[in-house]
Length: 377
Image (tube, rainbow, N blue to C red; front, side, top):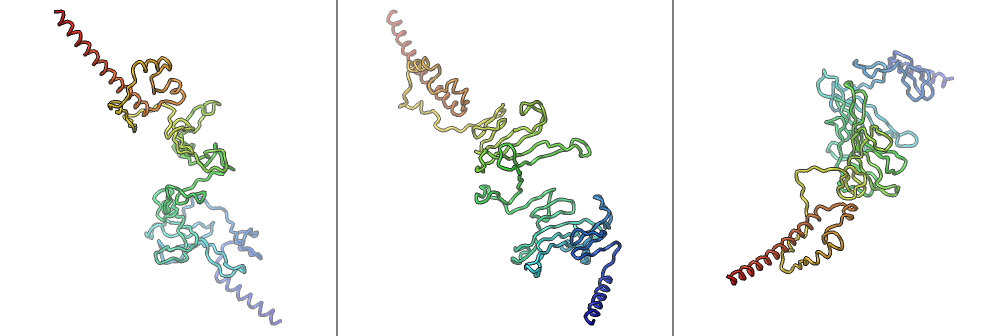
């Protein structure tokens, strides 16, 4: 009997304390394992039900949502209202530690400006404030007072600002992904040569920012059909109206600039064969071709100049000059401008030697003619 009276007294005291601390304007329902606010059938530990919140809510507070208030004596840039996620260290639920949090602070120090700033982060061991490594919350994702999102920075300068420690240009062969930047993943089921991870650039067609259409893209696919190969292929292109697949004119992305799995670059071709392969016309003010072993050796005294009889015999048999590619070879392999210019210069120099030799013979003949003419007179 005494135990019953004591238990009843304890319950009444606790109830009085609870009612002294809670101020409600709706229905609070408590079940064995869950609490419902605005609902008598809570579906989780805490279930808040309201009439819905407008996305364009502009009042000081939104009464239809959960409000977390921080009484820190004013609008602070470094402290604010926090929602913390806690997990116990022990299996019996003891020694709980915060694992991640969402904290909102003032977007600026102006007390009349309600601009906010939100920071999300996980707890980890690092030297956050320059006072040595300890357990801090990281400022991992920030949404600032103008809506810019920062990853790795609390002061984003654009819509999405990603800051990392930097990435080695030579990559990291010890893991499949290289950190320090932005990764776009395409879940294609397996490594594919036709589908992959895409970065698309979209612009609206209407003045009210409606009718969004992608205008250009960068897509990365597998360089080969072998799942064991990790070589990639990148394709850049703009959207335009053309018959890409032979099934009629439609809006497709063009495969305009390709970097293949060997590092070759293709313009107008998806299968470049050289460091730069262009399937189309090139216009330029100047092209510089580096070449070694320029044929000035033709003018050296020890150079064996082929006789014109030898050249004629080669032409009669092959229908092209010695060392110069044939028509069939050019049609199959194309024209190497650097090598061809070198060969043409060699032939010009050889031709010059032939002309010099021919001119000497003409001069010698003229001397003989002049001598004969003088003897007659």
